[in-house]
Amino acid sequence: MEKELFIAVCDRLKEAVPELRWIDADEGQLNVSERPPVAFPCCLVEMSYPQCENHTAGTQRVRVQFALRVAFNCCAATNAAAPVAVREQALQRLDTLQRIHEALQWWSYGHRINPVRRVRVTPERRSDGLKVYTAVYESAFMD
Image 1: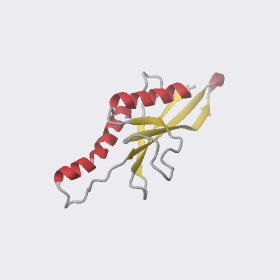
Image 2: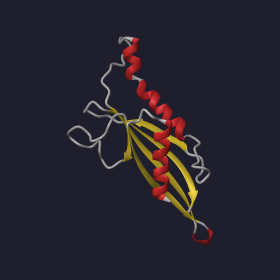
Image 3: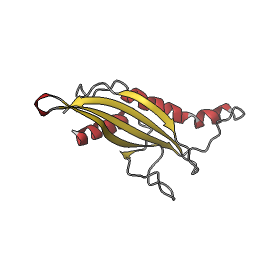
């Protein structure tokens, strides 16, 4: 189910958050010294099974997490002295994060998994001018 679920998450984001210009598996694209090989804004997806519990007849209850690294190549000012239009443009990244949340929160992949819930969203400290957030969502299913 792992490949099918990964594709479903990416397709869901592509459909619900059209401003994302690049949705892909997180293969370290943002960890390069030159310009990252993505289009911005991008969403890099890492799926993991942090907990699996055995149940009857060889089945398992699998807890699945999706770590989304959402990156923006933004340069506009967000300080209180900046013109309102400049601040609005710079903070559009927060609107994108909200649309990602609306796309995934309580999504159940056609009742194949438990409704997805947000666990946390944290910004990364970077010196390369990119603004990157890691958003972690979690669900569970029987396998």
